[in-house]
Amino acid sequence: MSTQPSTTPSTPATAPARTPAIINATDVTKTFTSPEGTALPVLDSVGLTLHEGEIVALLGKSGSGKSTLLRCLAGLIAPTSGTVSYRGTALNGANPGVSMVFQSFALLPWLTVQQNVELGLEARGIGAEERRERALKAIDLIGLDGFEGAYPKELSGGMRQRVGFARALVVEPDALFMDEPFSALDVLTAENLRNELVGLWEGHEAPVKSVLIVTHNIEEAVLLADRILVLSSNPGRIRAELEVDLARPRDRRTPQFEALVDTVYGILTGREQGPGAAVPGGPTSGRPADTVPGGPATPATPTGTPLPVVSPGGLSGLLEILAARGGEDGLAELADELSFEVDDLLPLVDAAVLLDLARTTGPRIALTPAGRELAEADILTSKQLFARHALAHAPLVRAIVQALTSTADHVLREGLFLDLLHRAFSDEDARRQLDTAIDWGRYGELFEYDKAEGRLQLTLDGAGPGV
Image 1: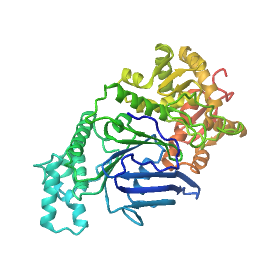
Image 2 (image 1 turned 135 degrees about the vertical axis):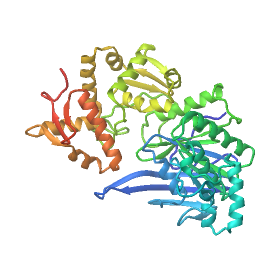
Image 3 (image 1 turned 45 degrees about the vertical axis):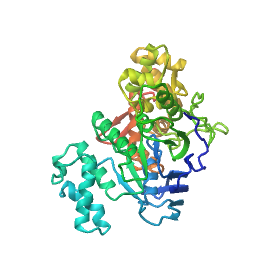
């Protein structure tokens, strides 16, 4: 098994078996514009090639632009710069060789299962009788025989997603695109659908030549894909490519599977040392949030160093568990012990590293001396320590405290900070960033917040309890 990834973001990721290319993306960059006219970069110089006969997973955290890239490749949105081509022809509209399966099922509630499946065929001008025959065949293939006349409201979530698969497969696309297709389902249903998809692919029953799946679930990517492309965040770049040379069906319990999962975790939890210079899976100790890698010490900004969306209580819990396990553990082992997906731990890990409370080395995490001190402190002392680290290493928290300190009455409306955040974040992400900063600041008793008034007010000394 090869697990050594490529680390050059601008080089198109290609499959080793030179089967014909279906879709090719070259230097794809996508920038959105905020309501205030500010540029919001989402993708930066992304290159990849999707070949016949392979399943490729796009893996990354929130903010990596996975879904945006998928939509660029599908021709649903145009890149700001760069090109996307299908079978060698540049796209100037929807990609004719692609069908999509969405997270939200996206079924029309007033149509039956069969009518929903026939939609794509009808749009292509296929006659009624051929539509019916092909739709019934796809419905049978996906395991919904007998539900042709049912309406979406009569179906479970898993059955609705099966309709989505049938609708995508019925047009026999070159490439099947899936955007987090299992994330809205319960664990058992998702596992069942994944296994059935693999069975259709391995049995050559699925009328598609390639599959591209967007996911944030690392084990899902390793279970399904022949290649995994890991995207970095804000903006999204291809940070690494990994070949998955494991026979299907894949067993999560094998050392090879676990080793590849650990490698991917190491990539996602590592800290880049500059564009294209990260060594995924290699040693990394994190970096201080108040410096810019590769240059002189420069204050980090709230937009340049987003806060991981976690609560102080959740972060403290992670530190306490690590302290109880000797101060160091593997992420996969830690997640297994807690009965969580490792993906769920990543924001907590990011927060711990950002605040200099932990360090990551590949797929392992270890407490720093400051992290151990906080984990073993009483509640009042731990709040004091958290306040100090938030002020030192969380740029948005520090910016709020500095702004409140500079006013005569130490009071400001939250709208000021939302307006500033909107220059780099969408409305939803700006709100999420501010809510996280408020949660951290209130926990550390750095400032108070009146939700009804949307007002922030500095605490008495503005430095937390006893800081």
